[in-house]
Length: 115
Length: 178
Image (cartoon, rainbow over all chains, first blue to last red; front, side):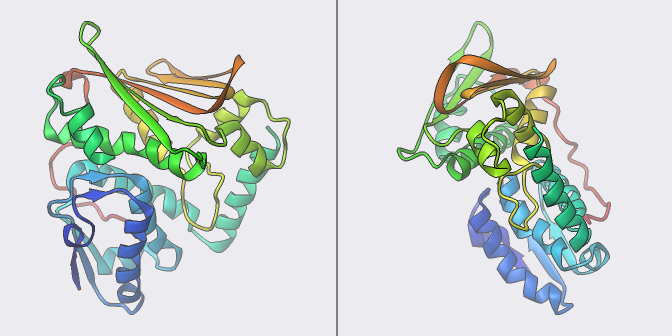
């Protein structure tokens, strides 16, 4: 499946709502083992909530090696790629496994409680 | 909001930046609005204004909300009302921290903006309740203040000279994404 981000959300890839809409379209395909191409042609402005919800969240249930095999991002300008890479780095750590995620949430809370 | 940033703030002809840099700045600054809307819960919305200082080659943007305030959000999350404002701000400004850990990876927005201002000789100042944070190329400082601001005020300063800016290269990145 090939999806045009511009056709779905326009040139601004910013909000978690738009990210979630993209996620809802691509997640079932990837989960079923089908290839997905997300085309960012004409998309210009990027922020982390959009990528957290559209792509970062995929790492919760799908392994990085499967995503590398099935999921392709095309025509993403360097400004967007920079944000996406940071989001993926953070998400990989966060979703590395259920225990890590719970541990990270707990550490975050403990850190705050000990301030 | 994006149109305001693109056409009224950056695009008035008082700053000469390429379209590519403009889009990058707008994306980074938008993270502040996203935070203000999501965490501020301001009953009367958000106020924003900008000013150009030609002699100093600076462009400033201020975003204000009259909502919960960062120290208060951190105290509610930590279930500890005694956390000093400077410590609460320091915690909130770390990469990956969020007061909304709902099973989704979060907390990247401020980090991206911080990195951007540090790298490009800009400045990010935050006044929230009795806390104050300043982030620039010298580092990050967090302080307690005698005056109390009922909400959060974010002041961002950019240098209006494209040569200051570090941009990622245009070459196609062949590395695997994940």
